[in-house]
Image 1 (tube, rainbow, N blue to C red):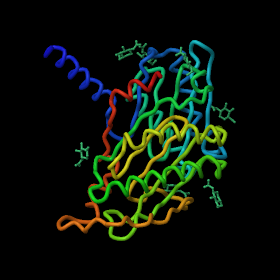
Image 2 (image 1 turned 120 degrees about the vertical axis):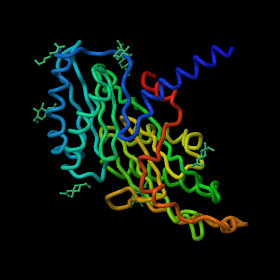
Image 3 (image 1 turned 120 degrees about the horizontal axis):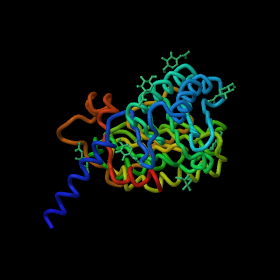
Image 4 (image 1 turned 90 degrees about the vertical axis):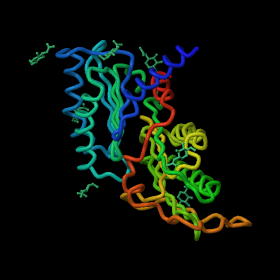
Length: 298
Ligand SMILES: *[C@@H]1O[C@H](CO)[C@@H](O)[C@H](O)[C@H]1NC(C)=O
Ligand SMILES: *[C@@H]1O[C@H](CO)[C@@H](O)[C@H](O)[C@H]1NC(C)=O
Ligand SMILES: *[C@@H]1O[C@H](CO)[C@@H](O)[C@H](O)[C@H]1NC(C)=O
Ligand SMILES: *[C@@H]1O[C@H](CO)[C@@H](O)[C@H](O)[C@H]1NC(C)=O
Ligand SMILES: *[C@@H]1O[C@H](CO)[C@@H](O)[C@H](O)[C@H]1NC(C)=O
Ligand SMILES: *[C@@H]1O[C@H](CO)[C@@H](O)[C@H](O)[C@H]1NC(C)=O
Ligand SMILES: *[C@@H]1O[C@H](CO)[C@@H](O)[C@H](O)[C@H]1NC(C)=O
């Protein structure tokens, strides 16, 4: 019995080391590797040279490409955030190709996520064509809402849902940003959101993709000041600080105050310490380590 526990514990440590790395977040596939100086590597190199340039001239800063023929065929998808400009997008992708080939060396399939861009490549062109939201990962901000978390959670959920609606139905780019008022006297004045799909998804498919992520929001992020649910086809994020560059598309007013408002805390700041917020990326860690691995090849 105790032997089994030790085995399980060390397995967890190995998976952590492999997957819970800091920003940018990468997911290495587990299905197949290629070797140095092969056609597969050359095809990946062609993508790395062309895609960062090509995406900057695409209408929605989105690009897919398939290079070569099976078994050396590589397909790739790249998407920049709706508020990124072409220069930042192209630069982000160039770095992404470098980083992911270091982090997932000789892996035939991999995904990597930055704030301005995401990149995925695979030896399985069907996976790209299927439009499945592969390469999913969830990141939670480990700072907790301490004052009236129920109210915060409800408003964050309402905002994320409204942002997903707007991204799917009101934007040809399938992108939306949002801001919701949390009311006077709370721990945080506002909560901010982002939702985006690849622009080749229909509105219904985009909303369905986001709904799949949002359905698990309360399980993953309840009580957290921030969280992001990332996938190759759709993603969303919320934070208590503004992390967006463009205009706010969705605005929610403060919810009606509850019958018995929570008293102000006797001690402690009512705003987060700068370090906890400014270090947004570094304060993230991964929940559901096993989920990362399991979701990679659903
Ligand atoms: C791919 O390479 C990694 C690291 O060298 C190794 O751990 C893994 O077993 C390989 N996977 C396959 C499917 O050969
Ligand atoms: C791959 O090619 C490079 C440059 O030609 C060479 O330096 C390297 O040794 C080769 N690696 C393998 C594993 O053949
Ligand atoms: C990049 O764009 C050029 C010109 O439109 C096109 O010929 C090429 O196939 C594209 N390459 C990739 C990898 O998308
Ligand atoms: C593009 O975005 C980057 C990062 O936000 C910014 O530093 C840069 O000034 C922008 N460039 C243009 C031309 O707007
Ligand atoms: C390729 O992807 C498709 C769709 O995701 C999947 O059904 C299929 O099993 C994958 N093939 C391989 C060889 O992994
Ligand atoms: C936030 O809450 C979670 C779950 O209750 C707990 O594991 C974590 O340590 C808390 N984080 C902080 C910074 O207190
Ligand atoms: C779409 O935009 C219109 C006009 O700005 C707005 O009234 C409507 O609520 C938006 N729809 C969604 C789903 O956000």
